[in-house]
Image (cartoon, rainbow, N blue to C red; front, side, top):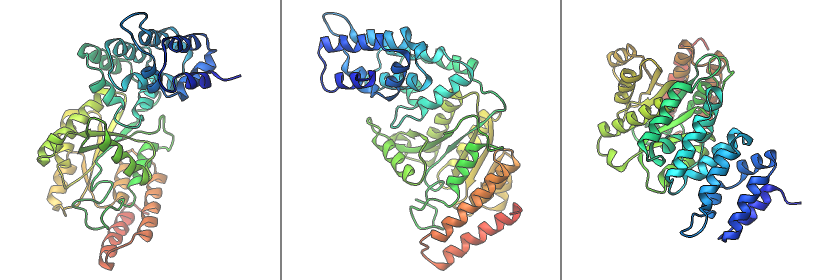
Length: 389
């Protein structure tokens, strides 16, 4: 006998008639709770909501679908299934009925459940992550404010606060513009393991995973193609779970405008995740120092640290000035991990893993010159020695 998932998949494949829409609703209404949960988690919910229409004459089947899934059977659905339903309502035009349903699903959760639901939504591929949902797909300002007020009042995690990492991409994770100490396009050795160490936390016992978000000033078009390209590039570099917040083409004119867009995105992030502390990782080439200073000033109570990967040979006096603001200029991610350990952000084992991964990648690097390799190895050895490794 076909499962609920099989029946729904067959019905929404291609165009659907009015009778087929009614059949979809009947299946969803009568399915056993476990089967419904599995179906909503695995089904292409974007196609589901696209296949069930409101019509000029007769029942508004899409509104019926929203009512059924977001209200009548919501308690039969787990967090992943509910995130999938929200994702289905995000794609395309999110009408007022859907916006209200999204709000009510979110407002039905608190504490750990709310945090896990937000994290699941935020890992959606493409441009429809949590920031896109709240600050773009939800057009009604009143509904947006209700969602953010609920996040502020009801988001919490059991145990100690955990940090989410927000990172720039070019010259921070990938050597692309000013970073010429590595072959162009290289993943900066140790950065991936540094992200992992931050994600695992100071005892390698994280409350949640996937706490990495990239903040980039690259423009994204209406289809999110630029964002998808960034995700593909970074996934190939070893990052399977992440979210990406992009800028606008109008923010590429100057370093100041790029920095301003990143600060705006991070402001959004602080409102979306008030239960988390924040760590920002950037570089010294394109305005990230200004970003770090701005977010420390605006959110100093939750910004645990800012790490700036130096690509312009910053003077010692400037490094000292920034360190006084909890902005740490680093030459290698071994040095970053060691400082993060001092700040209680990563475990001692995490620092060791960053060093091991850095050395492995240095051995595999297709160096352009012997001098290039020696420069980096000397910096890594210095930072490892300073960390007692």
